[in-house]
Picture 1 (tube, helix red, strand yellow):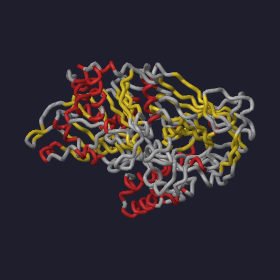
Picture 2 (cartoon, one colour; picture 1 turned 90 degrees about the vertical axis):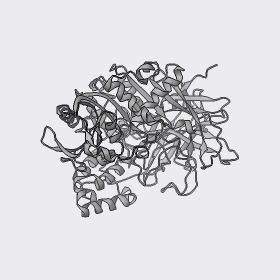
Picture 3 (cartoon, helix red, strand yellow; picture 1 turned 60 degrees about the vertical axis):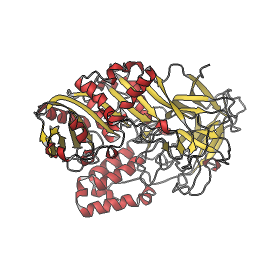
Picture 4 (spheres, helix red, strand yellow; picture 1 turned 180 degrees about the vertical axis):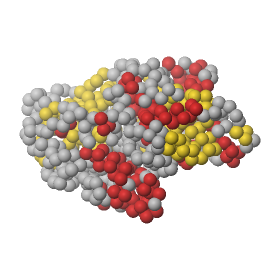
Length: 628
């Protein structure tokens, strides 16, 4: 009974921000009298932000009174909220939707989240002064407008009482935007797309057409990186061009990335109930679990975490990429559950949230794997999985186990010998290893997200032939013997390399793969990517400071992979791929040591992975002991 109730409690967070609202809520003409469109709310510097207000109505008339407010601040156009805002208004809330600074109908200059705190505080203060507000605010939203929730919480807006950040932007200098010092090109892609639809300049039809044409032929521009000011149509949207150029050149985790840096500054976060929602294949997964680890000891909260097998914003689906995780992986529930979280924390109602004692299960995870690997009717690999309640993250019972890289291609628990020779490979920046799925969002024609067989094909624009990545000479493959029993890996993952290069700067990448054996449905087997990561060598010692390499010298480097929960089944193999590129997931290192985003040259590097007794390169897996 407790498990069932706990499951319901963890479900309800999705009902507030995740399930596609357009599928459930239709527009209610009777609420039109309660809609206030394009209210221009003044900020402290005089800039005005376009804001829509949805008030409770009955029989076409506004019901006078003071109500708690649900706020969402987004750069994608507040009109997108009109399908679900009336639902909250009909259930006793005022719903407020706002275009963020410099986007759509709001004034000002756009910059990635940096005004999210101050503008959020000013908006909250304005809300508190309105005759329809009782001064209490909850926030909801996904991705960027998950990030605006974090920004307001870190600014400690007095009226903010609870947040549900879903796949939220945060810790931009740690991972998901700058990752180990590399730049995630999905934000090059995102910024180009945003400039053509959300910038102030895109209101001009001619400008919008030029910006949209650039987005349409983005692959051609991708081949011309680095991006420089004034050299592409992006110059027509200077706010977006300025941020992107600065973001691509600013590799260090410094003040440029300060906004929403929860990992380094958890003390800034307001002490309120927080529900963190993420997915193992989401682009912000690493930061979602990191936030839980940072906030849990810093605030009373309570703080909850739920992680499913999802890609970005797709919690209502159960197949992602080429893999099916089973129908139970999708979150769906009746409409009335959507109110539970806000009703409890904003109205003080004794409902399922309070009655189920939510402190009993702070963490809920979907453990991937456990499926039989058959091909579904949709042609997907059935990987399967199941939900499980936990009390903490990482799990207290974790047995961190090193699997060592061996020069014969093995991946073993045994420590390497002195005779284990290093392996060198040639890394040519002009021929980078292509990205096949993974923790992606904002792919838009250059990237695909989710769980994929690490094999090329028509779905990979820069790797069209059905050739596995393992066939490339610049990919080092290390795999375990066939597993004699199931092995669960749940938690944070790191690869510790000892490496050298002929260059003063280069990259090293790592990828964890669940290798399915050949079967009737998949005669060649299936090489399922679980997670990956990268380190730019100049940031090997610190994400805050660059330090070039001495060619030929061996250095220890740590590559942080995305967190996961996966059962490697009996008969499978665990595999780790090492290389120096993953494109276009990450920008390609030219190996020259020139300033970031300002290189004019590229050169081939000879990169070497050392794996002997003195240099025991390994992946550290968080193994969960089986219950006997």
